[in-house]
Amino acid sequence: MDIIDISMVISPEMPTYKGIIERKPAIEVTNTIDRGSNESRLSILYHTGTHVDAPFHMLSQGKTIDLYPLHHFEGKALVLELLNLEKIEAENLLPHEAKIATIDFLLFKTDNSAQKLHPKKFVFLGESGARFLSKKILKGVGIDSLGIERDQPHHPTHRLLLEKDILIYEGLVLSHVISGFYWFSGYPLNIKSADGSPIRALLRTISNEK
Image (tube, rainbow, N blue to C red; front, top):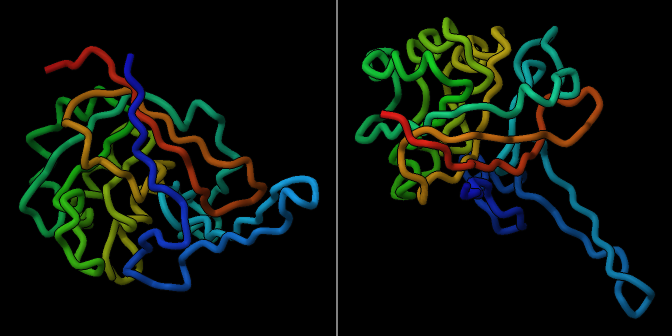
């Protein structure tokens, strides 16, 4: 069984949502070895880098990330490659409906993985696509960009999924991953009342079904 890391490296130079500088993490050296030990402090938004969105991120009465059992953050996943699209809508998902019915997590590999797009023009999940998935039994939906939607008024994609306890995984690194079935894990930090959390997202290879 191979383990594939699909997480972004955290550093002050890492890319952020739409290139917003204020979203970059800060790493401060607070102690050095000549004083006994090396110690550093990390300051990071819950939604910077590879992370998971809890319902409370977009819903005033939504659940926070600490209220979910650990098994909600792992399960069978499908990495679905959808290329040459500006956004993913229901019509793009319908041909894959039978496969989607067998999984816990759907992870989109798009042209975002080629890193040829402007940071503000990333491929995203459209409202009809989110509505389609909201009717499925899923634990999570992920994408290879730092946002699952792009400037949509009232955030319908987030709301449709999060209202059904379908968590959203953003900032996945899938450029080195081929489409197919995997075992996914993306555990959050155990932060009380958090609207999201950075994660270490991993895929484990399983027998690849057709």
